[in-house]
Image (cartoon, rainbow, N blue to C red; front, top):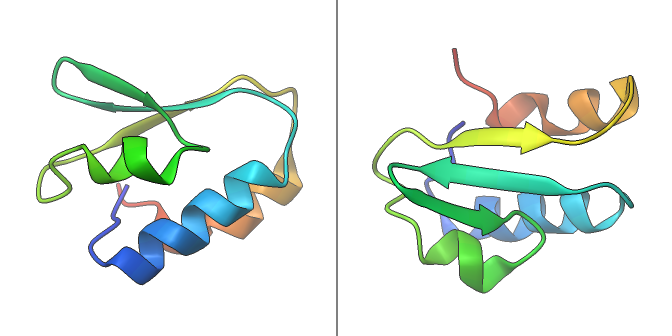
Length: 71
């Protein structure tokens, strides 16, 4: 996952807040709520960030965040 600018973080956080399921971001030993802009900004965004979304077949969500996904 790539969130390299404050604008990207805000846009990603706004997308996450549109959904009612839990979304967490992981970076090293830290886990933050993806719906918290302060939580996201507390991570070292220069490193790889992983996401865990507790949803059931949310293709809409995946299509909304596709610009932030890196493999």
